[in-house]
Length: 144
Image (cartoon, rainbow, N blue to C red):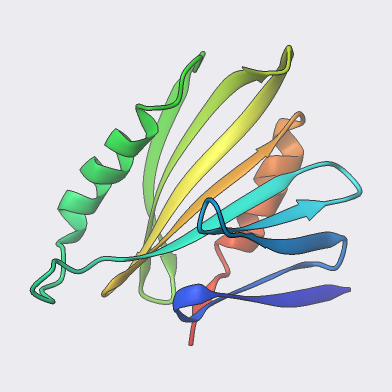
């Protein structure tokens, strides 16, 4: 079965009901963990507007999003992709690997842009195929 999760900023994502959701107040993000395969999804809705209310152009968002990933240490490789995922959204994704507690983890970070809003998404797990499967669900995100 599938379950809809309402994320701040009007974002809605549908994932299998094996995902358990919680809001992590200290990080200001939503965390969904699949109890079957250990994949974790972290979602942080953000504004894509300047202080004066003007929209930030999507070209600038990609650079800013990539720069935010530079703070992550221990990346063995990075693969960048940009693609339209439908529903008027643009996604900028970065794949990388990193050792966590001595175990190699696979990460997909994805910034989903819609006029006036960004949904910063991080998918992580020890099995690449499990993370890629979850990315397909992320691509179906909608905004109310």
